[in-house]
Each structure stands twice: as structure tokens, then as C-alpha cells.
Length: 166
Image (cartoon, rainbow, N blue to C red):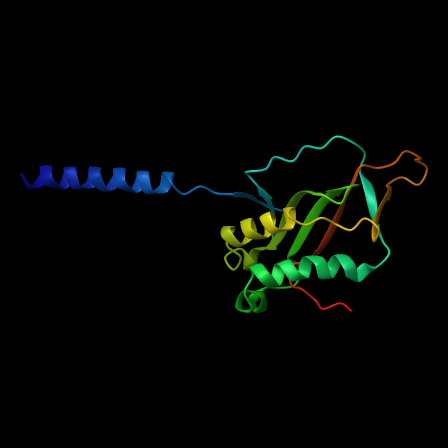
């Protein structure tokens, strides 16, 4: 009789464990880069596909973009977390010629993977997507100098550790 109770309890515990684990949904894919020290972190919920020609971002004011994204980073990540981050954590933003943010992904150092939660990354992603870049301060130029055709989108990147820029 005692063996039956044990079997039933183990079965119930296993089923409960499976049910709990199946409800944990990852919002981001983490892929370790060949260097072994940094993860490429991409959203599962937004599969990036864009048509057009990729160009390069040219800034009339380098501080404009830095300040724009630093404000959001400081808003989402508390000072305590920011102080724990190591140099090299990066955001990458894809935007179009209208200044709309199309996509965002991150490079996260291995030692910081547990500092920045999925919820933090999700909140950064959502806030980034709400930004509209002032295209009078940022231009998209052709990636190939011999190319005359206008480019439709570009990428910019910056540190997840905000720096003040004046």
C-alpha cells in the first residue's frame, strides 16, 4: 500500500512539474556567439522581415540618438541593475526612412544574462518600438558608395549602459 502511495505521489509531482514548466514561455531566443562570451538576443514574438535596401545611418548630431535611447534605458532599467552591467551589452535598432522603429535586438554579455530579465528586455523592446526618430537629424545613406538608389532602412546601435552626451 505504501508503494502505491509513493508511485501516485511521484506521478502527481511529475505532472505538476510538467504543467508548471510548460507555462514558462520565453520571449527571446538566446544564441551564444562563437566568442563564447556574448549572446545574441532576439525576440520570439516579432519575426523581423523587411523588403528594401539596407543603408547606413548618418547623424547630424551624434548625441541625438544616444540621448533618445538612454532616456528609455534609464526609465526601464533601475540604477541598481545598470550598475551591475559590464561594458559590451548593446542594443541594435532597425529603423526605416520615416523614422519608425522596425525591430530591436540585443547583445548581452554572458555574465549579465541573469542581470537583465526577459521582462526588462521586453519592456525595452516595446518602448523602443514607440519611438519615432527625427529624420531631420538622421539620414539613411546608401551602404555602397557606388549605389545611387536610396536605401529604405538602416541599423543603429548603442550601449545598454547609458552615457551622458551633451
